[in-house]
Length: 240
Length: 91
Image (cartoon, rainbow over all chains, first blue to last red; front, side, top):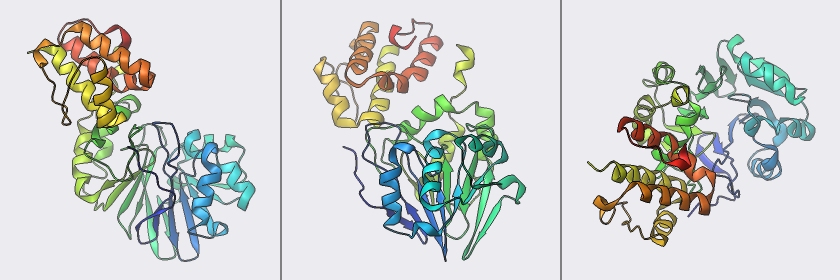
């Protein structure tokens, strides 16, 4: 039985889950907020379908006019198609993504300034914390990034570590890694690429992993999740 | 080793993750396959190729393509490794 969350969930100091649970899709979308002083960053703004409910969730915890940044882990519509609606609501802001993603995000008709994280030293200074971006090329997009809050040690992972399930839980249950494999094995390109990229995070201090789909992986299961990813059988379509 | 039992183990693990344990057990029960809440199969040695086809078709009928998508790659891999026919529904 899926969990229904009507309200945002505080995950750590200044970090909130603001996803949407009332959907028939097995590919549920999570969005997250980082609130730091007078600034707010919205991570993976979300789909057109859920804009109304998601923006209401966000309004219940922060003044949306304080949103200064949209951090987009790649360019897909499930996380970017609401951007024009956000701009209509609060005006243009700054969209932070890899240059290879921003070149495509432009085509949503956005008016915000497109800031390429690969041109700003992979970091963003917010009033009380430093946000770092980690390059994860080809997992699954060529400009894929993750976002790391150095204050709370929360890793926002985009599609990576995401899961496919109708039986959704905010925090990963005992069956979650199977849900994760079922999604990842279709979207990740090769074991070699996955292993090269996992090396970038395996020694990082991580309090939890927050993917854009599926469930949050708590700190005590992070190592297991990374090992699981390293052993993922993927890229199989090449052999069909 | 019964490859078809191994295939059913994969189906059970993946459908548990996709649908939850209760719904998975109910769908299997409706076609005469009984498993406990941990996913252990009753009479595992009796599982045959036609059972796998029947089970996959039942999930597809009741849940849709996604219940087949989540098992497609590991089942194909197992079939190819063991030199047996890939179930038609995941071709």
